[in-house]
Image (cartoon, rainbow, N blue to C red; front, side, top):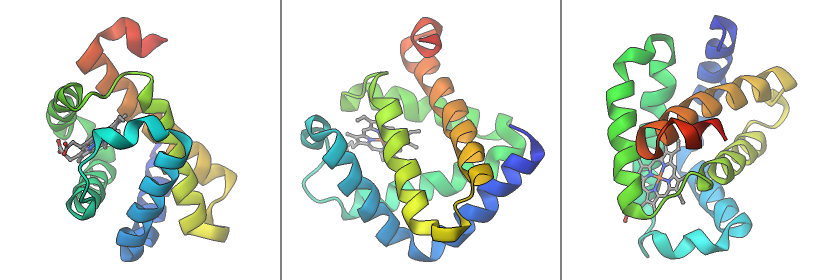
Length: 141
Ligand code: HEM
């Protein structure tokens, strides 16, 4: 990611922060619409889950400028996800739901540059998490 892309991701995420609860509802609704098979993996009460997701995204977004500080936590998160039943092929689906949510949440602020910056950010994070959890060969696929 370029420094400009990091700035774009951080600026756009700060616009979503005030509506983070709504954004999280939108995200999971979208995820379960495009990947109904993953719904059973999540707890029935999603309130806590929504908070955790948005809090973690905030940490990642804030850490983009100094990646080395968030990699250990991202690695641990990836390992926990193996236990939740997450597989490498789920990551692109989660990424698609995330980008869709940001597009809805940001409206006119969702420019092609912002989309490219988020695609790069999610690609880097998910590539790292997949490699940590399932090995480098899966991440390259
Ligand atoms: C970069 C991508 C992702 C991020 C940032 C993320 C973030 C989180 C966070 C913060 C939690 C709360 C629990 C914890 O911290 O361990 C969580 C739980 C969970 N995630 Fe993810 N996740 C990602 C990708 C995925 C994928 C690809 C799946 C596959 C379907 C998935 C499925 C789940 C499930 C099922 C839980 C709930 C576990 C439980 O409470 O029983 N996540 N995720």
